[in-house]
Image (cartoon, rainbow, N blue to C red):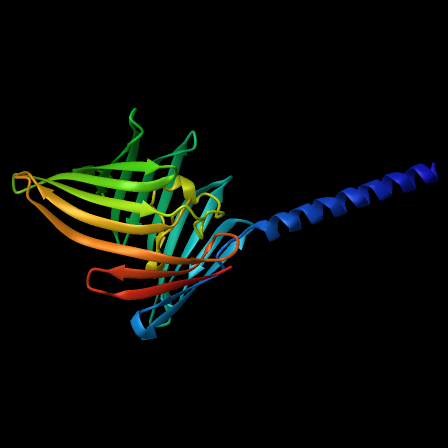
Length: 266
């Protein structure tokens, strides 16, 4: 009987050890950005942003100016709270809640500096996604739809196009944002829940969190109802990568020759 007990105890110890080793191995395999260093042209300005995780769940992102806190339900980010640091005090500037149905983002509720907004997502048969924006009266709860609709296009998990349609002074206007990606791993690829957020996540000088690949270039132009088009903005990005194919440095180029860099530390 004692031999059998000793045998079972040894088995349990081995299993527990294996489980811990597997968890540690899983954590070691996770490639996650721990700090991100933004530098303005000629290194005239530097900002360090730190990222804290529980496994591959992002808990918070912070620098000397602000902090984003995140809450999860399962593998989904369901809440984001953003704080700014003003005169040594922490001030909450926004709170956003995310609602999903069948792994799809359906509703985003956001309160920012006393203003309340709601974003509704609907999924079209052609694979595009419609986003409607509402302003919410904080006293009455009444929702007022903005005179604009957005159509989002995703390609292999990357947001590649946003078209915004709206009327202004009886004129029809279409704003188009185009995004181009490389084929390497995004720095945020292993952050749990980012892929469900439809481009809603961003942080300060880091910009948006691309969930799959790295943004190589973006452009923005406006077309008026008379087919008159203005090219408003063009920006390109160049990357350096580590041996695992994740970016270690991003250089940003704009039309006015602005040169900024972002370095990723894992």
